[in-house]
Length: 302
Image (tube, rainbow, N blue to C red; front, side):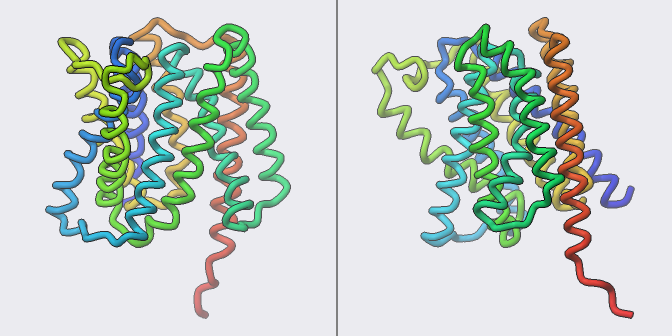
């Protein structure tokens, strides 16, 4: 197989595994605080990927500035994952995933504001339409769950900032090393937090010694996080992002299937309508972005 085909297969693997990680987080007993699930997710990712980066010879000593960037990226990813894991404890994974997928639109807008990238009015309209699609999912969820329905929006916003930071670092580092350092940075931020809240009774941060079923779900969250992000990093290394990025919407299909099989959750008609609008708008944004990138490439010499 050529590199592009390999990248597509790896991206499909990521889209199937990532919702499985979410399902294990949702299935973790509620006495385990979300912060402890995050610590397992990032700690095991770091333990898995750092040795691979060392074997590949891609790990390197980082300076103060790079350390600060890793910590900032880790903080954004912690917030993104915290919001999402909290949301799926109360709502179907597919609904949370559909709301989260306004992230490409937020990323487009933030890229214009922060990175001063030029975006055309068609992409702006597509972003607005995508947000309207998300409202078809948020409104009925909000009437039932209240503010929890907005948590996936928090995930989308913080993950978009994480992606902007990643853009500035990905050109200088191997993706496996970058993901390993992300896991380490997130663990450095999370573990002292768990110690600080130990014994306080806080339902979100006070750690609980996991037993039985919880041990396996926590281990599964971390293991699948490491494997899935390794697949994603390798896919992005083999295949242009413009080709595989729209495949990320397969996560919604996988989320629907896993949510139905594991939790008997199935989206209603309004949710399906919102999903259709968000996906259509997102694919259009990806298509316009790819066309813009091609147009920016220098013409080949004659």
